[in-house]
Length: 133
Ligand SMILES: [Zn+2]
Image 1 (cartoon, rainbow, N blue to C red):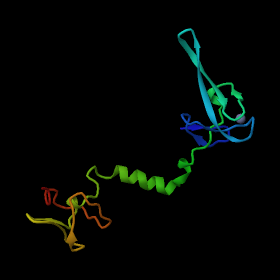
Image 2 (image 1 turned 135 degrees about the vertical axis):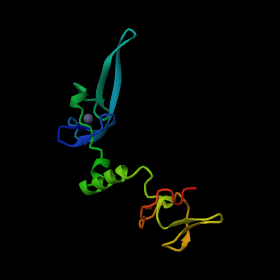
Image 3 (image 1 turned 120 degrees about the vertical axis):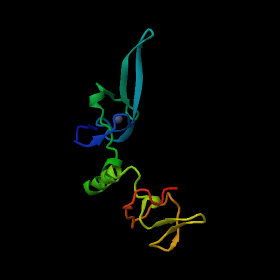
């Protein structure tokens, strides 16, 4: 994760900038610089006013809002989901899951379920083998 001049997290691959020269939200123009066939680097300029940024570090990338959508609590929750047992909370691993030759059934909600359904009332099976098709 990179941080721009205002301490906001940015994606350096982005093209949206907040140009300090013209003071507007603009787009970044990247132009490769060649010497013969050899690529020397890139120049970076503002699509609005043409201001050239000295280096990639000077580019005022616009803060990517998606980084602000999640607060810390939500991020912690997301982290927990990923750490959950690989098999997750699928009905087929729930103690309420009953399977017979005709249907897959949730004993708790008294309804048909699919092995890959996900349920908030998931209770991990004591017996790991139960319900495995
Ligand atoms: Zn500009």
